[in-house]
Image (tube, rainbow, N blue to C red; front, side, top):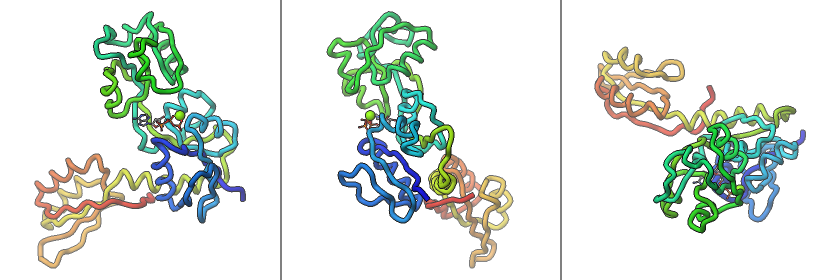
Length: 282
Ligand code: ATP
Ligand code: MG
């Protein structure tokens, strides 16, 4: 069987997390070093290590079966790709930013001005949708410096924490889109191994979103606790050595944990333990 070919970013913000996802899915990639093409150990998968901007083309042309890349890059390239999974890392947003003292305070204030960006296609699309006419100055990087040097009055760029904008005396005016790393494939011709690969990835992604929790509870509070807990099916309940007390185990979504922990404590729960899950197969 021919190996599944995956395109990953070689160096940069997505590189490490992409390899970690494969590693956690039981597909370890041996030391990459200077290589651009590396076979996985113990799984029929070959990794191509590329510039992130090139990943959509490699996948769209069928040279790689799948790829991991920022949704912003996928959207900019506009190739016929499908997003198979959103991966929950590399989160950022595509925003309009201007110098702190600029008279531009909203997207419509950009009308008739010049904007520099590494994302000319997306910028043109979003400006058109908003009915704003501005000149787009395409760049290949370091857009933050363009307003200060007088090349443009505004930039459209990726923002994560906003600290880069702050460093360059820029202020965020408008958010066009949110982005995260995505797993993409061509729109047709799925590789025969893709289903097995996705099964593994899904187990890792599900586990990352969930926590295993266990706590001690007065037995008479069980019905109240069960009503609070979603769990996979229903919680596991075990008697404690001390009469009238039980131990309750279940799986909860991380985002709901804090609210639930307070409610459980109000029911008399003690010693609430929260444990990371490595894989979760539903
Ligand atoms: P390459 O050398 O592969 O072309 P790059 O410099 O274009 O890399 P990176 O800066 O490594 O790209 O960013 C890769 C992706 O990571 C971005 O396209 C975006 O989806 C995501 N990302 C997450 N946080 C940030 C951030 N703070 N700044 C820029 N990109 C971010
Ligand atoms: Mg790039």
